[in-house]
Length: 98
Image (cartoon, rainbow, N blue to C red):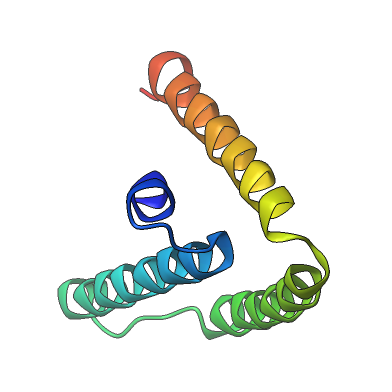
């Protein structure tokens, strides 16, 4: 969806990254709710609070960095990040996953 929004619709990369992350948040939220319904209300609250704290810290750091990085440079860095993740996931599925 990232190349589609950038190339075909001409949206700025910062808007595209934010939109993509919002989609991931929505999908994760509904997946989490589905797991709660399926598995019950047994949660590891210490893990959830720790994860939430790290997530909030990451959002704050990302916001500061985003305001300091040029949009074109961010587009290149995000493209490389996506390529590295694709390679990692493919290698994991082909060689490591059972």
